[in-house]
Image 1 (cartoon, rainbow, N blue to C red):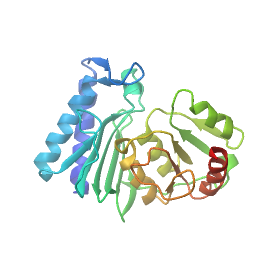
Image 2: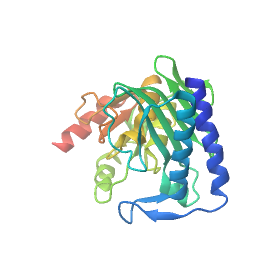
Image 3: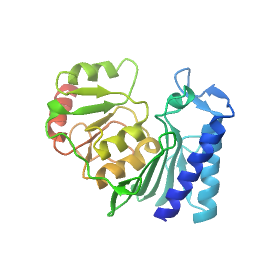
Image 4: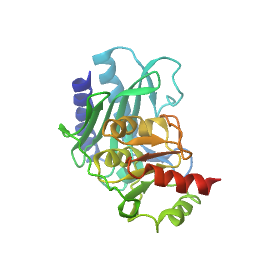
Length: 252
């Protein structure tokens, strides 16, 4: 399943790049700050068509087309056809396709493909995480003060986390894609991703990528987090404790 799923996501990514050149419609989804493009829908349809053909009828949790309700079955796909739609719509490269195969609400396989940069992050539970077929061996910072932190963006909220952390870390980045930010943390490009409101389709694949590369996923109070925790810390193990102390103390 692992190799076949990588191939499917790769093929869909290449189709997305082709479609992108021909133009596409954009509309508001849940308000003026939340958009969806014609290609979000088309990419999701193509993914589901290929998954059905290859693996049979497995339930789907996905961002678009009213498939965003948590499945009441043990095994299912979690799909975000374009994570980083706003970036995509403005011509930025930081968008991706994210797909996870989940069993018992725990991802077994995760794929994050960044088509414009041709970066394929892939993992299989118990077998490690890979970037373009090379095993990921992250070189994380061992000190919070030398760390690069990424985070989500909620208007009226994000700046509070900046104020809390900007003098504690080396740099803070917002990339506009939770899937990419978790994959970057797994790869050692960053040291943590602070999720403020991510959905399961945003982070299911990245969740497993980080765990398979040796990282940790916890709630702000330090307890174990799962893919349905919208607010969570995805971090390198050297700085998890320091970040928990800051976040836990401040949120009280």
